[in-house]
Length: 199
Image 1 (cartoon, rainbow, N blue to C red):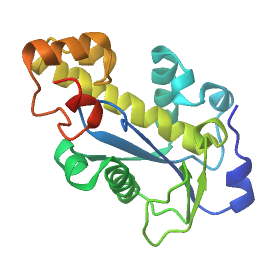
Image 2 (image 1 turned 60 degrees about the vertical axis):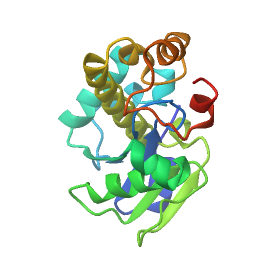
Image 3 (image 1 turned 135 degrees about the horizontal axis):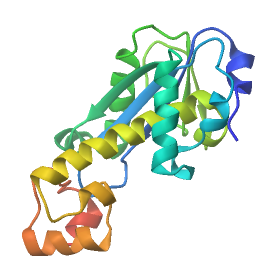
């Protein structure tokens, strides 16, 4: 379970940063940055974990509790066009920088999931598997996943048939079949190797 050991050791105003959506065939990559309150309400830490380990209702409950306790959340995205122009790695780092910039308070240190710092003037510690270790990174993973899933559900309503409300743009069989049957949309990452091999 993630905890606050990294945050406590570093001190200052810590923002956890994580992204979601590097692997899908469609949709943006989205990042979140979260500054937790100095004192967490009882029971909040037990709600927070790596978003991939949580059910959708528990993720929603965790995000609601984070907002209620005053956690600061910044969100940032990189579009499909930016992914195709920059490549997915650099687009992910761009989304992270945008999420950090969107925070209402400037952090003094970043904890970032993975092994690449997003760049910028704020000191940063990268942590591989950080969403399973750091509470602030896990909180960011929840905010990022919920936000992107909701975005893909809205896009699904405008582009029915691809199953994005359920598969979030990942390469599920229903999505691959729909690409062959309906063709790609403007939201598909046409430069992606897995998509190119599917059309």
